[in-house]
Structure formats: C-alpha cells, structure tokens
Image 1: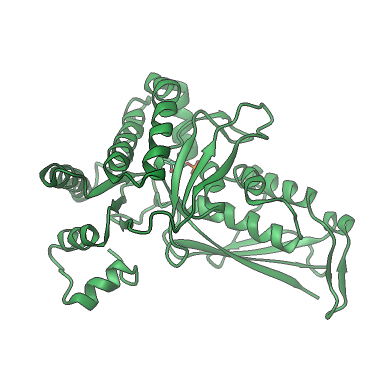
Image 2: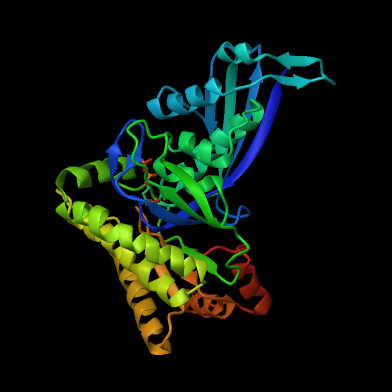
Length: 357
Ligand code: DP6
C-alpha cells in the first residue's frame, strides 16, 4: 500500500525584511519581519508526500528532478515532524500506522514550483512551508500552524511566514532553543482585499549570492545591519502593524519602500558588497529597476497620496503593491508600455494573474 497527501502553499513577500541570523542551525533571526502571502492560485508550491512499506529510503524530487535530502535543513524538518507523528488509520484500505512505525517508514516527496526556483521569488519559503504542512497532514500531527511554522523555519527562515494567508509576522523570539521564534497571522486575506500585487519578473536566472550566504556575510561585516536590527526594525514593525490594521496605504507604502531600500543598503554595506537589485553584467535589468523605483516615487509624489509600494528581495524582480485595482491597471499599462493590453479583457487577465508580466 501507499498512503499519500498533497498540499499547496503560496509564497510570501516580506514588507519588513528578515536579513541576518543569530543562530544558523536553528535559523533564528536578528529581527522580526512582516510579509504578505500571495494568492495560492499563483506563485505556489504543490507537494505530494507518500509513505509505503515498500519504500527503501527517503527520496525527494523537485520539479521532476531527484535531489538530495541529506542537507541539514531537510533532515531537521523531517526529524521534527516525525517526532510529532501520531497513529494513522485508513479503515477502508485496512491500513494502520502506529506512532512508533513512523520511525522506520520511508517517505517519497514530490514538489513542484509554478515559478522560477531561486530567482528571488521566495521559492524556499513556499517549498519548506508546503513540505512541513503536507507531512503534518500525512502523519496526523496535531500542532497548529504557528507551531508548524517553527518547524518550517528550520528549513528556511522565510518559510515560517507561508503557513498563513493575509499579513503575517515572524516574531524573532528570545529563547536559545528557538521555541518562541514563530509566525503569527496579523490579519487574514480578507482584511485588505483592495491590494493588488504585481510581480515584474525581469530575470528568472538563479541569483548569484544565496540569501543564506548573503545574510551571513552581512551579519559578519555590516554595521548598518546591527543598527537596523536594534534601532530601526523594532519601531518600523509596530508602525507597519498599525498601517496594516487600519489599511493605511500611505504609511504602508512609505514603510515597505523604506525597508526594501534599507535591506539593499545593508547588502551594499556588506564586505564584499552584494548587489541584488542589479547584475552589472545585465545593464538592461539595472536600467529597468532604476526606472521602476523612480517611476513609482514620482507617481506617488504627483498624486499627493501613494498609489504603489515597491519591494525587492534577494533578486532583481520587482514586487509592486498597488493600493487598488485602478492603480494596478494604470501600473500594468505603464509597465507594458511597448506591449499594451489590447482590450479590457486582456487587461483583466493581467489583473487576475492569468497573464504574466
Ligand atoms: C530577502 O528565508 O531565503 O527574502 O533562512 O537562509 O533560508 P534562509 O533565508 P531566506 O531569506 C529570505 C530573505 C529575504 C527577506 C524576507 O523574505 O524576509
């Protein structure tokens, strides 16, 4: 027999960034962070986990290609979930797995991303969150999403925020064992339905410096990172929570843009400097990014009240958050200057995410 479960998890985009660890093994951050989880219909990971007495070893496939599970991060997640596994019974098929059996049984895991892996679109976030959630379902684990987030965190920090929809806060925690470093939902996906998130994928190439090594170098060499973690983020997190609570787009946009810019300033303050927003060998990408930032800044100033916020993660792709459908439509027309939508239906397909930029 084979017993299977499938889960689907969207990626999340940080509006207050996580950058820097105080513990590399447990993945404990130096500051709180806040993110928005995308609609599951779009950028998401789908993971199927299966168990069978016929399986000889744990194996995993990512986008159809077998990959090694020997890395510490996978092993940590598998161990933590196995510890919490409970009895599972499928009466119809006459299958019963007792708690103690989980130690001996092997797993097969198949995972698919519907977006480019490792291009700064938080694929590890959706990936580990989905893996942990699917395994928890298969093994009948009773822990809630916040407790599961503390396990997903050990796969990739940002993954802990993908266990919830809406706006999510990863509380950095104080304990050395990481037990209080977990995600909580601030508001659900219905709270701020006007927002439109547009992702301009300017490059789907793998990033040159992974987040993991980039943030390690920043922790070791950037004094701006220390200042950011101790002085800036604690205040900014409170302000961001308030902006989200009251759906105050002007404050939200100001804080999100400032935080993205400070994160990239920390990268520049790292020795040797990390350039995520551009790749100097790709001039067009650099020009495009500068254009996006200055276009948004100018547009927001000319309207008197912000229409759009931008944020960039560890890659050159722009994430643009528009205050409403009208602003999103205007932004799409502008982004697609050379290939404008042909009709309202065409524009709608961009707004619904059926067409990509
Ligand atoms: C820039 O979660 O990918 O996207 O914990 O080492 O796996 P690890 O790093 P990761 O870092 C994400 C960094 C970021 C900001 C954010 O998502 O908060």
